[in-house]
Image (tube, rainbow, N blue to C red; front, side, top):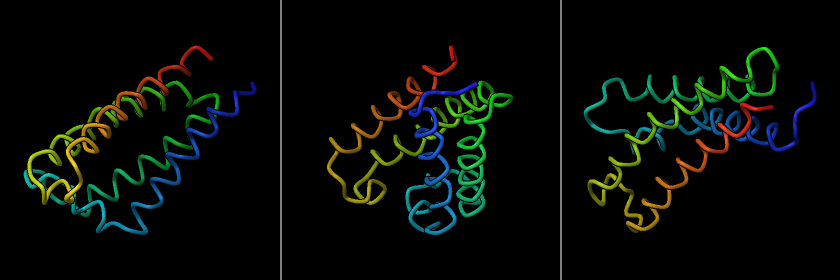
Length: 119
């Protein structure tokens, strides 16, 4: 089955984002909530998951499962986004409106993934 090009785009975006976790792990560790343990391991785990799910959405046998897991992953990442609102340091000194836009973006990304269940 041939999927629309934008499904492959989504898969590529997640795969590239996951690879960046391995290239620049410190960037992700800076925004990890303090109450979560093993920051480095969680950054690598989330990077691995993003790569795996990015590839998985492009393969017919794993597409739907990968989509549901992407939605679950994005919902989990909301912890990080809300944590970033807790202080200027946690929010990397970004304006509050940028942090709120990032949260809204998470919901858009969830919808974008869910959109492909019907294909």
